[in-house]
Image (cartoon, rainbow, N blue to C red; front, side, top):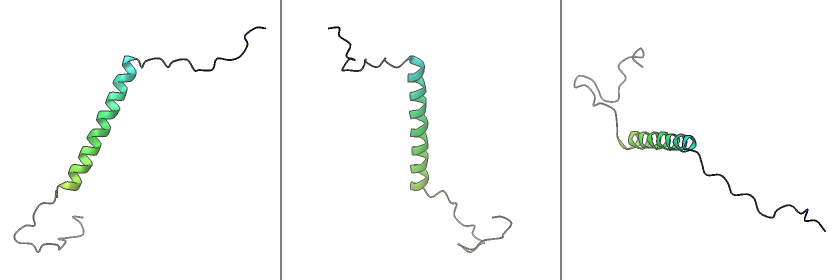
Amino acid sequence: MPDTAPPRHRARPKPPTEERLRRRLAAVLLATGALAATLLTAAVDPAAPPAPDREPGHASSDLAQ
């Protein structure tokens, strides 16, 4: 009786190539930078203080918007 049954286990996956590792590292660094920028923007109030001759919270003009 010949052994015609398919193997029970998959073949081991090949280790990633150097190019794939570089691309993965670039993607991780890009995502980390975007997350850091988002957190920094949320944590820091980037608005400048109002000018001394202007009322705070009052828009100066519609054109500047």
